[in-house]
Length: 217
Image (cartoon, rainbow, N blue to C red; front, side, top):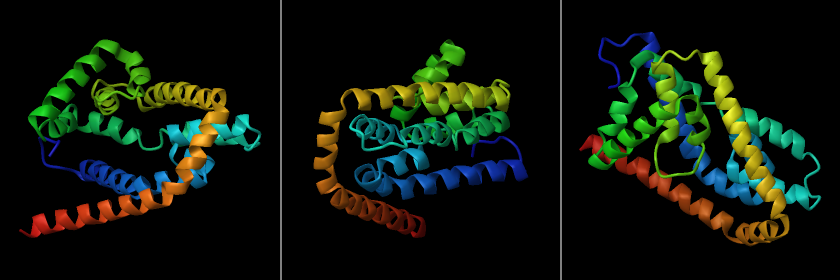
């Protein structure tokens, strides 16, 4: 567990929110695939999805999404909707969650050690780098350390919002810039999206069943 003391209500509540975030992620896994094909604007507004925002930009550039300003503004907000949980974890347990994640394997320990060095060296700039799609858990570490080092929730949300808004705007502009080929790619993807979504649902269900069997064993 991430705490080094007898857990109180705040500890249990924070850990429960991590559970909520996990369940949300599992539910959204197949939904993201389906919505990207059939409602990228909905995906962008519900999840703050970068792919949804980029697809919305592509459709908007072709005159197929007149309400794109609303989509973009809502996506800016929803993209950070669960990030406060990591800040709270850092405030409650310091590096506790990082230690839990690092303990999963030697590879995880190495990844989190590198991510933590980056996060400490970058300071507030780490919020911007956190959204770069690289194979390191920079985002989680930056958010946890923000709470652990005493950054106020208000400042955390401001930094996070600025960084997320910057990157989502870039994704939207990229979608807009490559509108026509992006739209053609999206139409091709639509033909197989349903099958991919169904396959992901099967994978999620089988994964849950396997975990239950392991717990029983």
